[in-house]
Amino acid sequence: MFDTLSERLSGTLRDLRGKGRLSETDIDATAREIRIALLEADVALPVVRSFIAKVKERAKGAEVSQALNPAQQVVKIVNEELIGILGGETRRLALAKEPPSVIMLAGLQGSGKTTLAGKLAYWLHNQGHTPLLVAADLQRPNAVNQLQIVGERAGVPTFAPHPGASATAGADPSLGPGDPVEVARHGVQHARDKMYDVVIVDTAGRLGVDEELMRQAADIRDAVQPDETLFVVDAMIGQDAVATAEAFRDGVGFTGVVLTKLDGDARGGAALSVREVTGQPILFASNGEKLADFDVFHPDRMASRILGMGDLLTLIEQAEQVFDAEQSAKTAAKIGTGELTLEDFLEQMLAIRKMGPIGNILGMLPGANTGQMKDALAQVDDKQLDRLQAIIRGMTPAERADPKIINGSRRLRIANGSGVTVSDINDLVNRFFEARKMMKQMAGQLGFGGTQRQSK
Ligand code: GDP
Image 1 (tube, rainbow, N blue to C red):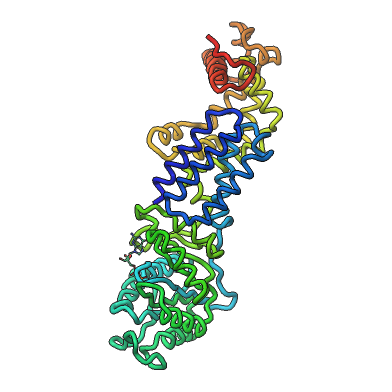
Image 2 (image 1 turned 180 degrees about the vertical axis):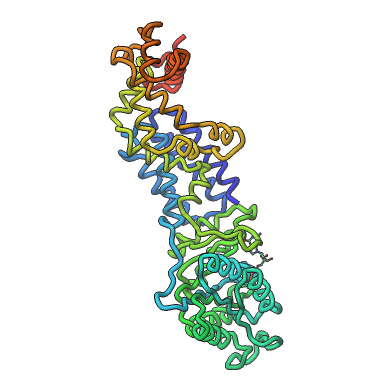
């Protein structure tokens, strides 16, 4: 899911990164690319329109033109707006103060309701709750049995009508164990009597939206007074998801959405549209057929995943907190002219270290969880940084400002003072000179800092 969208969006944003200042034309071109990517991913048109309008407005405003790195600021805006579409803050399941809490599931047949009932029960059970499943889907042959099976797997009991008592479409819905409304009502009463603290009511779906389906779901809702009504939607059904969601919102009403089959390879626009169109938050995401293939839905993590960014955003935010913009600009200029000193180096290192253990910081970079990078991260050691700091602190201000003056006798003095060997000092000084040269070259290529020309 989202692979194509993710590739296109991250490609578009990557193209921006090479640029220093952004013109209106750059921003319009980027907005156009993002628009195409979203439409191709099947995101509903009104959602795409309002998204693009917001991104454009912000990208042309002061927050970008005054940013240290305008392209990165645009990435941040796109990410923030994406989180907004997906619902902003993570919305937790709202359980009742007085148990039992009642959670009713509604959605089309095949959307994954029964499977989800089992996953939700399993998840709640693992958190110390005592859930009860209630089989009020008497429409589909075998639905009761299927729920009992997932319940057993989850280690959670199922309240079901007597075997063979399933109602068929058109049966008198007024009474009896075959009446889904009565089954739901009895199920909740049973939970109350037996002290189950959460009741999950699985209801019938149809292949398409129809009046009978809505009426039955609304009757069950009135009978059990759910704390949460979750609309379960298959993320693979594309644009239809929006119309279905609207029909359920108007016919039954729901307090939250569950996206299923996020493991599929469809374009995923449904997932991006349903929250914005219905105004209700996405609570959970289901991504496979196994009980454990289920998670709380975090808009920020999903946005990150779509943009292929790792947790880069947390990193940028943390950096914003510890780096002073003016100071950073000065350092950047010094990098450009090759005047960076060991004093600057020490300051930057101290700022970075305020952000936490270095392994964690690097671990937030995109690609950190893959092959080579993962191995390299395992080698990173905060103690090495401590040692570098100790060495630099052992130098005089003159030495830090101009490391070229650090001759043999000074090296011996610094080594003795900071408890390391002369070869450690040589290592540090040589690496510093190399890094300074490399950074100056890079700064020249990127067009920032005091020089535009690449040093030879
Ligand atoms: P219901 O009619 O709404 O109760 O739907 P079911 O729970 O019976 O699910 C319909 C089909 O979708 C079944 O074959 C499930 O195994 C499958 N399914 C449900 N959730 C997921 C999911 O998250 N990923 C995948 N790949 N399949 C799922």
